[in-house]
Image (cartoon, rainbow, N blue to C red; front, side, top):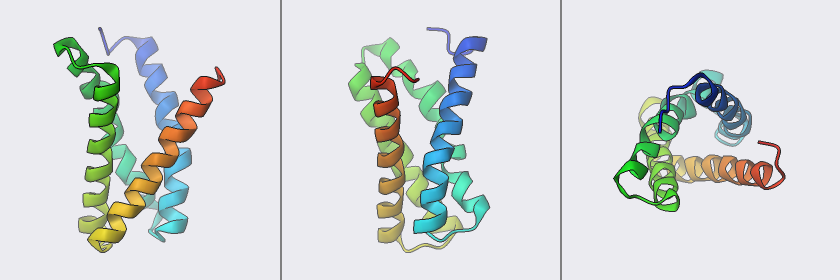
Length: 117
């Protein structure tokens, strides 16, 4: 699997924009964080989720397990970012990250099911 082909990078760019479109408003409105802090969490985690975690499949990890591991990573790192950089209390940061990530996964799966992505 070559993850650095132009078509794959274009797919990542579309997925990244979609992720930002879903998650940033949640962080901004629900979390009441500044704009930079609303776009930063997924900007930090999305490249890892898209380019690093799929490599696990080369080592026998199923797609489902890879997806679960990568989403757990995104949730934890984004919560840590919110807690440390934005000083949101840990429990609230965890819940906010969970909400944002669950929403973007749900939107992605729905769009995929409808054949729109």
